[in-house]
Image 1 (cartoon, rainbow, N blue to C red):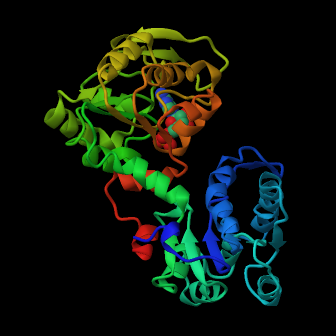
Image 2: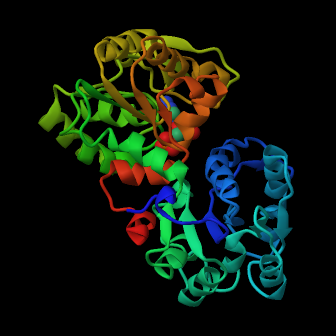
Length: 392
Ligand code: AMP
């Protein structure tokens, strides 16, 4: 597979698919990490005197009212600040205005095209990888760089569509290269290899469990999903989150891999799903019918730390508690800190655990925090990623 450094981009019109899908509130960017992660590829192209034409999606566009909410112009402003140079924003995804803006570019100029998902308003052209749209966008440049790791698991016109119309002239950018290098460490991990899983539902994690349970030395399970495993073991778990449909799956995994699975022995429990009430720490076996576990307890934290003591590789997906509530983020943060303090090679995969690490100021201290939630999950499930296949 070609990398950006394998292509001759000097003085060329370089189309770059970035992932500028940043969280917004009231029109303001809450976290510009994804824009910062794109800078290395953009700067490299600028150093080569390329004309840089940027594409990205932002949010979802289903109806007319989604357009204003997901206008990419706010990203152009931030990008311009970060690069300290002009970024020309074109409020169109096709047509004369866009073509003229590109035609009149000088080497070192930057154009950002409006949100690629504006094309979804008329028949989901971007998200269904409309053939004509991919051809059209490809016709605007000389080479194509895909650097949007967050959408690598999707076949959209702005990634797969462009790449398949630029055979031999497409490559991955530095961010995708970094993400793939980090995740590839999991194909042949240094052992002990420990998987930490949390989050809400078992159903979202079945693929990962199936794919990693044979490779991992241990799987530590916390978060809401742990209660379905505990119930499968025959415990009463009060009013904790339960994924009834997957109890049978949990039973099978526990029966086949009993020695590998580590489940919570205690939890921080309360009676309402909120941050308002005080919580108690209780053994799982002592939960009353109206009590729910919203974080793992201290004994479980010790159990998990013990299991991680000699770990050489760790992949972590999903928080161990309801980290959005201050009271229940504690042990996710404690375990993150344990890994960082002990220099354990940990890869955080998935939006929520990366957000938890960011909030705890630990994101920059871990070995790798992936920018792609769904993309990382599909990689971990062992699936082929269409964005990568198209470049290959
Ligand atoms: P996921 O997207 O599956 O990784 O799930 C992340 C979500 O799981 C977060 O919004 C957490 O609030 C939620 N979560 C974590 N632990 C629990 C728990 N014990 N009960 C309910 N939800 C939880």
